[in-house]
Amino acid sequence: MSPLFPLVTIAGSPPVRSLVNRTFHWNARRRVQQLESAHATLVQERMLMRLVGKAKGTRFGRDHRFGSIRSVADFQDAVPLRSYEDLWRQYLRDQYPIFDNLTWPGRIPYLALTSGTTQGATKYIPVSRAMLASNLIGARTMVSYHLTHLPESRLFHGRLFFLGGSSDLEQPAPGVRQGDLSGIASKEVSELLRPYTFPPLELALEPDWDRKLALLAERSFREPITLVGGVPSWLLALFQRLLDLSGKATIAEVWPRLEVVVHGGVKFDPYREAFAKVLGSPKIRLQETYPCSEGFIAFGDPATGHLRLLFDHGIFYEFVPVDELESDRPTRHWLGNVQVGINYAIVVSTCAGMWSHLIGDTVRFESVDPPLLTFTGRTKYTLSAFGEHLISEEVEAAVASASASSGASVREWHVGPVFQGALGHHLFVFEFLQPPDDLTAFRRALDTDLAKRNADYQAHRVEGVGLPLPALLMTRPGGFDAWMRSRGKLGGQHKVPRMDSEGKLTEQLAEFLLAQGWIERELPPG
Image (cartoon, rainbow, N blue to C red; front, side, top):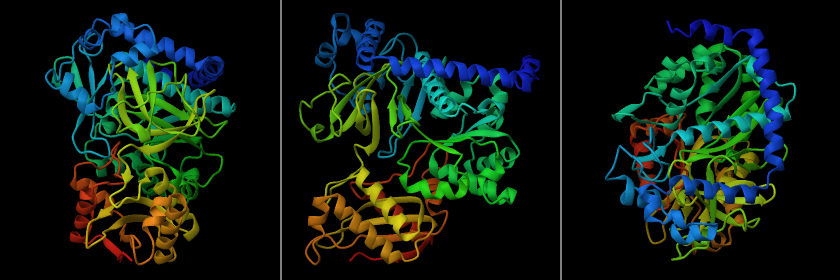
């Protein structure tokens, strides 16, 4: 038994919970006021100077003359844009796993492992103590906006359920641990906070995702869950197990105290209808977040419906117009000169030693003051094998529109090119929670919506001349999970790749599903 057990018991008692809830409400009002009264551009400029000053004695800082940087312009002149692969090759690879005074002062205690969703190679993202504090500020800020939006909230009278991956971290060197980000976060949770969180550490450590999901449902459906968060597809899988286990019709009946569902990692529109149905109550808020391995970027502002950029917690942002990414000297904007309505690739410099790092995401500003944005997709999520120039935002919206018009509810999907014959075609693979009434009409609606959104796609879809109607595979429930399991990427923070620009991943997925007998229906191209 832990020596802190008596204190943990007291911490979870009703009087202490009431005190904690009131304290968080009070702090929430202060935090919201602080953020909304701040001058974001000025804060960002000062943040960059603080980060540069902190790291000027590191190898990276010396290489890039951090000691002489006095402005954003100086920084952009001294530090080129870098992908993770560039940083790995130039700085991290030869020192792995000990990053000591390399790009950030001191030894990096954690490495967040991620393969992303568009490439397979494992990435080792540095997570410093300062970044752990930054992530905590991001989470607390998100909660603060929830509490101010819902003054009667009793969030801390129950448990906050975070559906993450395995928390079992490896130790590749003394003082260094590596694993997925949810595992790192779980390790850092104070024992005194355990009465307020779920799952317990021993369950969070379970490495087998199928067994873990079953145990999470079994152990949680009698808990007073007030918040649940995770990747939408895995949340839906958990919810279905809870309904099967409890015999209830909706999650609102399983967890009557549930106030908010926190989701992130993918565009939510295709899941919206399914969540509304399974939750069963309009009182349960859907809270978008935008965290990534490099840092906590933004959170859904309940007052505006957009993502609010976090700008005061150890990250400096730059924004590069997506259509300039392939140029030799792309324009590097920051909060001082971004414009509304432009699709930007987001670039971060962080308190973990990632400098002018292209994280692979794209955003569009809806407002500059305050800084509100929309997540539009991934820089590598494009389809242009046939000159159609489709971006992820357009395909995501078309899937959501076709689902809404046909009564369908999508659990997972993927699209990529198939190079077959003179022209080739697109292949969509869908797994439905609720199949469309007419699969052929669903495909036609999808195609029509894509043509409306993208003139190049429309031009290439000239009947009898250009691209045929996309092919479509409909997998039985569980098909995508089986494929992800075969790749060692089932559960937690792993997400099904939405788009494949080259077609290799699409081919692998289709071959797996066909060979394993997962295909329920198939519509050929044309």
